[in-house]
Image 1 (cartoon, rainbow, N blue to C red):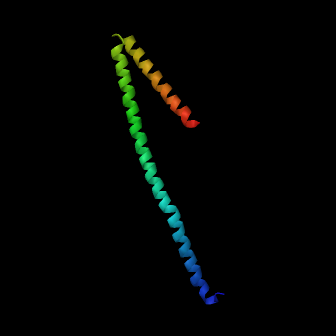
Image 2: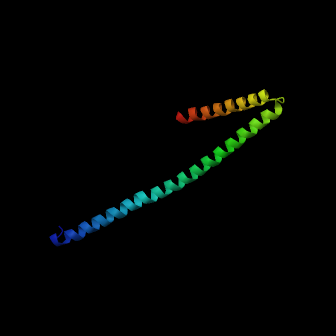
Image 3: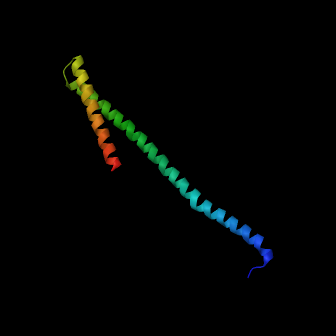
Length: 97
């Protein structure tokens, strides 16, 4: 049995041990989670830039393939917007399920 005089010391040790345990179990995991989240955000930004460049290249290709004229250019832009919107809708649909 512990002595009454030892209770404050034991209480202080318990508090210190609890603080160290919580720091070890939360801060370390949160730092790793932050690192993974940072890499994920960077990858998402690079992927978005790539998709925008690919959509622009596809639109420019359609403008070059179709005959000259304002209506043909508008048609190429409309087709590109439909394809980009369909791709975005497909990604959103697959991400939600």
